[in-house]
Image 1: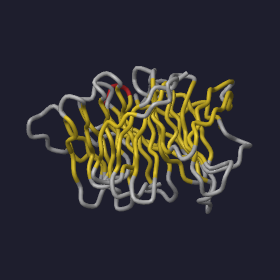
Image 2: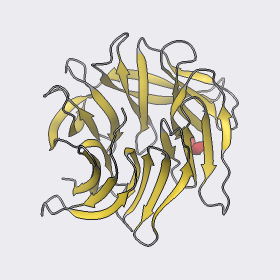
Image 3: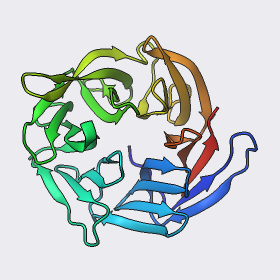
Image 4: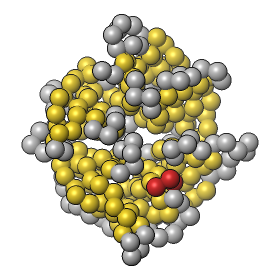
Length: 288
């Protein structure tokens, strides 16, 4: 889902005090928070036409730009490379080089989207409709050894890797439906004969809870944040939850409208996007 706005502002506020502190205004709409580091107030953002990096020391700068925009992007664990989709093909780009050049590692006449690096960046997990509906695939970042990671009915999108790198979470949209979705979790297992990762022990986290769930993100190995509208139609709201036997537990509303929440890597705060008619804001709050 795309957030439309004239500009985006980033805010920071502690959970207990309830104060909001403006960090930065971004001159376009923002689709996702890729990573949030409290140390140095560092944020990576996917915008309408730019991938942005903000630091307290250097301010806001674009690290990649496409007039036709992006459809999913992610960083590797050391912030050395950024992986992104152009809406059809996948690229990665080093962030440390003085003149970084993107490298294409997938070509699809349909759509390859939502890339996430796995196993130290050797493999990339992504969603593709190359065989009909969207399924999850893996490929090495040199473009070799393409394999199906998971096959299910409907569209599987927005994968996110757990902090320990052992599990993946994503949303699944039933066939011919765009008004409902569910969150699923699976373990990542390497196939010894082919040395490639596949999904094992797939389980539904939100089964039996009607609603539209979007962009789930891990907030620790047994906690996660997500956006949903299962309480009020057409009104997105942010939630925090814990997993208990792979099911929803201790669900807490973060308030509406709080879109696409993302936890800081220090696990102390989370940030989210708040949308208005002519603007978007990014805010942060202390985690309990």
